[in-house]
Amino acid sequence: MDDQWKISKHDPEWKNIFNNVASTLRHSLREAAVRIDHVGSTSVAGLDAKPIIDIQISVLDLDNDFLYRPQLEQAGFVCREENPDMTKRYFREQPGTRRTHIHVRQAGGISEQLTLLFRDYLRVHPEDCLRYAVEKHRLMELYRNERPKYVEGKGPIVWDILQKSHIWSQETGWRPGEPDW
Image (cartoon, rainbow, N blue to C red; front, side):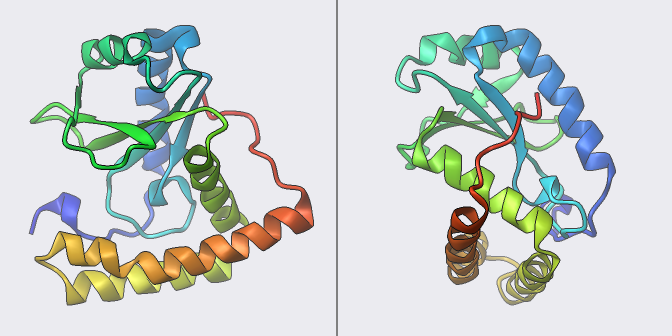
């Protein structure tokens, strides 16, 4: 099995890897990036994850990819044109380099906000963080060779956590904090 396709114990080095990539992205994108954030499971201390760094880049005009696409490509990332999610533009690492997923989203858009809310909620709710990790391990065992089924299988717990995070956001007045970069 591909090392990128297994759940690993949380590795504190993931934060350093993010910081190195984000530094390069910030240098390349300059003011085109409103925010650069470490998202996904590797961004939550203590959460087991596939060792893939997910980075969310928030931009003011998602549809004007001239403002960010050439810079991302020059920094070594490849646009995945076949991405069906119209709320983002998706980039991946070049073959032979460390697995990194770049999600470019509209600043202030619902998908940008939900991604940050989900991450922030898990960072301060260890019981749901553990519950999510246990479910990911269960699904990985069940769908070891079927990535789409693994992803689909996470849907119910992700929606449950999003619902809880929505309530938490109302109770706390949550807003995205400062960007990671």
